[in-house]
Image (tube, rainbow, N blue to C red):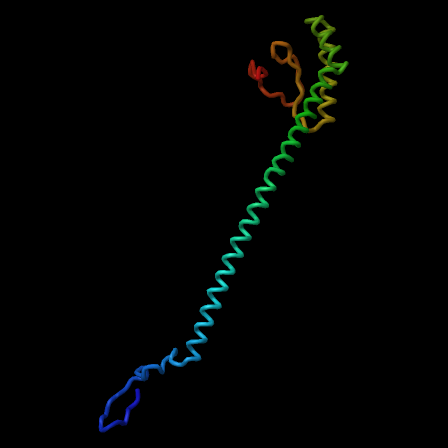
Length: 164
């Protein structure tokens, strides 16, 4: 604090007690600078918001374009995988070793030829299972859906699971 020597008064004045117009925004240059700064800040924020909105819309449209393409690729891969598995089953079902062995098995029913046919088909299926590692089991079902034989980790099947 300082003392003010005035017209015979001995008063104390605070440093903040200044004349009007002598504050931070007291000068014209300070007011213009603040106005320019505020205008620049508002303009920058408006440009940033507009840019962010445009970028968000652009990215959303790109994602919306890519989702159907990605889904179509997945569908194509699944269809190819399913077609390959169907072909595998058809090859196994039409294999001469399997067909002849199961024919002998069906005719013999309990004799020595029955065990030999069963062993031959099982050996063939073990060989196929060893070559095709993406299968965990290969098994043969009869017309009623009962398991005739299988190799690998054959799952427990419920009756009627193949009826769709």
